[in-house]
Length: 350
Image (cartoon, rainbow, N blue to C red; front, side, top):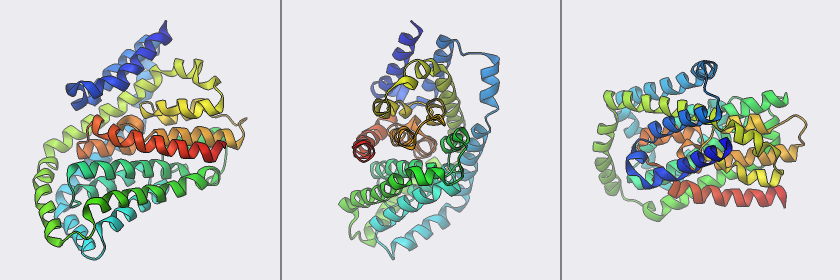
């Protein structure tokens, strides 16, 4: 009975935000409420759980990083804009986007996914393109960052937990999944450049200036103290919600996911689009597994994390700062992630 209710909650989370605009606009609060319901239904709600969640230093680090970066952008946005404009005077926008996606993807394992995503959104903020195009580039870049950050235990919680669970060395994940992730990052860069090429190839300075003027009002509206504070609070609530959901859905993971064939598990791990992939990785990966199984589990989790906003930390930060709605993200994230999943499956299993 409990599992059936949890399945129903998962279905609600996956569908309702796309049909109810009020929920889509307040996805953080919706997920928080669903998280509370999930932990209550599963019997996981306790003072120990709340204490464990509130002691998670990442909640405060990410929230503080978002708040501080917002303030810094407010202070230096004119200089940043001039810097980006200067670069775009020397290279095309498509080359710039390619470099942005690839460099952040490759360095996220060192500078962390949090820092990489903060750099991403501040640059995307002032690119001479419309909001809908920023959404596409951001989704692609976040998938690149999410993949790249897993190459070392420094990059993100998932890789830290995996290295700890397997008791492996610093470069183990680079050796194990790097052969898939590094090419995927370059593919993401090419995809971003190809998309930009559709509307910005040989863009004239006058056109770029018009874009900058158009976005100026948006930037002024977004980057003010009140908005920065509200956005930081929303991201904190979002992170709390993910912690609650992961704890609430643990019975489903324990009863069903952990006992699956690795090929099926690869696809089932698409649930990491709404659940914390680090928690799933910790539950699924064992030192007794061979590298092929570990590789399949990790790639399924990492790629699926790009599908929806809750999928990973870069998504949450970027969507929050750029005001990207769930439907906007899913429209781009799901087809791209599915395509990458299919290609990766062929390389890993066939």
